[in-house]
Image 1 (cartoon, rainbow, N blue to C red):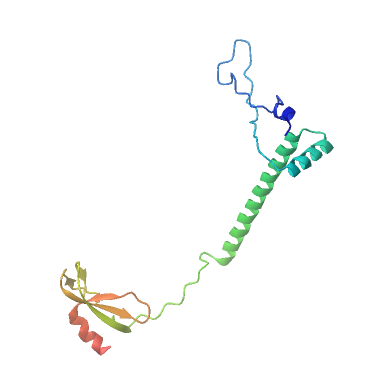
Image 2: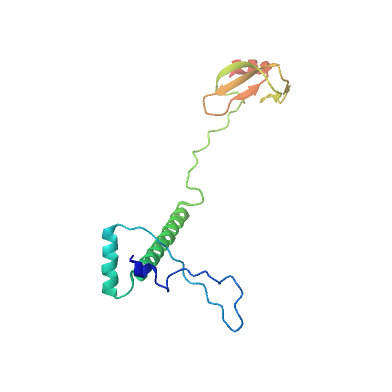
Length: 165
């Protein structure tokens, strides 16, 4: 922008006296647009000036119009993208991820056991087979399964059930 354009009284931010009460008989002026200063490459400045000359308007009006149009285009694109995403999710159904068919439940709680880890409990627990209370410091077994079930804490008395499965 040239010095003449930056001093254009129509574009300058004139906050003087706006917050003060108006004098008797004088109407309060509406707030004006704010001034935005920015640096642009020389090539862009030349293009903006040439466009402003061809439109016969100040460069500041060209810049304002281009910015407003760019924001309108971005807003429209965002709305369209959101609409397309909603349409896609509606077509896919309530859950886009399809759950794998559940494996049949084992007939015995320890069926499909892969291995056992002996451990000493550091906190109270409960046997996953019998429901018996297991106290901190007592021995227990941690049963691991091949089918992806989480490990199961069981009482050492349940070892016999593992030998049968």
